[in-house]
Length: 102
Image (cartoon, rainbow, N blue to C red; front, side):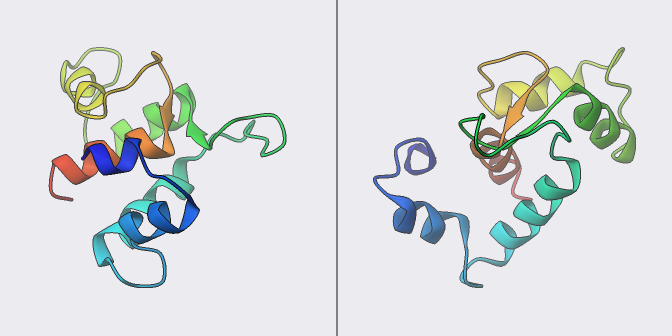
């Protein structure tokens, strides 16, 4: 999965993430990410789209995990190689769900 972290340009990234219908799982993951993207995300100010704490809690509830009490959310964040607590970037989200064979 290093390809995702070290893409050379936008075309490489889009190919890896399945833009243009090349990868059905990539399309599903992107759609899921967009559903939970943080409402405070600003393309001009933020480096990359992200899911914040509220989105993580909503996502967790949707999949039957209590984010405040269950260790599964920490395992999921670990699979995503998250660099910041309470925040999943688009790359991290894709990486984690790809590792789970979503």
